[in-house]
Amino acid sequence: MKTPELTYPRLRPSVAMAPVHQTVDGILCDFFMGNTRVNRRFVIQQDLFECLKLLDGTKNASDVVNSVVGGKGDCDFLHKKLKSLLHVLREKNIVEDVKMAEISEADPRRRVLSFLGDFFPDYRLVEVQGRLQSAVVIICGIGGVGSWVAHFLCRSGVGHLVLIDPDVVQPSNLNRSLFPNKFGEKKVAVLSELLRSIDPHVRVDVQDSKIQGPNDLEKVVEVVLGSSIPPRRIVVVNCADEPNVDFTNDIIGSVCMPRHIPHVVAGGYNLHLGLMGPTVIPFRGPCLECVSMSLKKVSPDGFEEVRKLDRPLRKLGSLGPMVGLVSAFAANEAIRTILNGDRLQPALNGQRMEYDFFTGNIKTTGFERQANCKWCGHHGIYK
Ligand SMILES: [Zn+2]
Image (cartoon, rainbow, N blue to C red; front, side):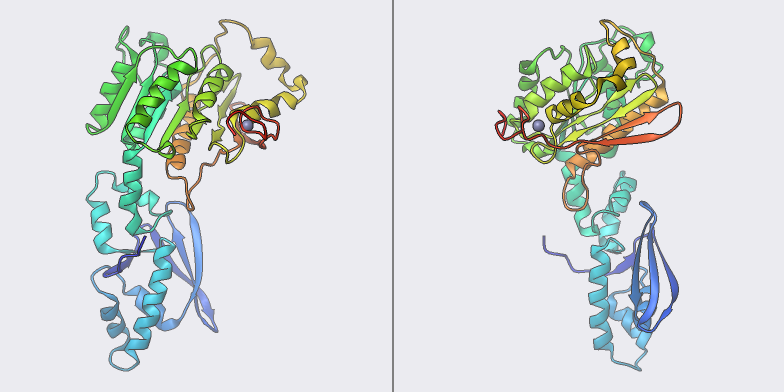
């Protein structure tokens, strides 16, 4: 993409510029990115530093240079140096053009755009927002985790959600899911209405039958693919734990892998642990079968307690904030996956996290792609 001209530059409002100390080459200067708490440090020549202090979006580079030089120096040379510096600072998301900023600030999701502005330069934000709007996220299961995932994505500007769940709202759902007390009504209908009340422009498609095998999910995915959405703009999020996550992972992986569709395991809760991930970008990291193979290699002794609970019709306790934590991770992963590129990638590609409610610790486990994986290995069926 050709970089548009920077006409009226200014420091982004979420960035703070602070001189650290003088060096022989100029002023060592910190640029602190308020959203992500990243600090970028540059040595800036004194005259350029004086120019940067005057950038408020009301003057162009020539005006700023004239103010600093005041007819006593080489304006052309300083102007050239300033333009070169501003180009670097813009690519590092420190400087923006006020005209671009006005477009972002007029948008109701200006805070989302400001956040993403730490990852993408100002002139790309409209395109980045368009990627979210044109993305499709298919959420399998909209219970405790899935209902919150859908709501986070809707609020963040994901334009098209597909909700799959056969259940009705029950009083026992209310401790952890987003639903109001519309008992007996289909969850997909209640959540659709709620999402449209947040964003009337969001497209919500629903399926109120259960996914019992790959064919059921294939039908949904093929409809989406049939509307010319590229696979990289689709994300399937697994929030279904009936009869168990392994069963639903198997269905989702077997449908998504051959179609190169990224998928996120939202996780859930097991004992006192909140489980998050992994995210799978097909053939760019381990798939769910690779992860499953890796877990089977682990000594079963460590899973003694889990095995005791692995019985039909088991019902585990749940705490709303734990569910919220898992949901937020899954929604973040879906957004990072949609925007996957040079500047932002999924955090849980090949990783699984566990939040321990007892200790408050978060543990991350990494997995490797398995050469003999039946899905993505050397002789895998989806190779
Ligand atoms: Zn694999």
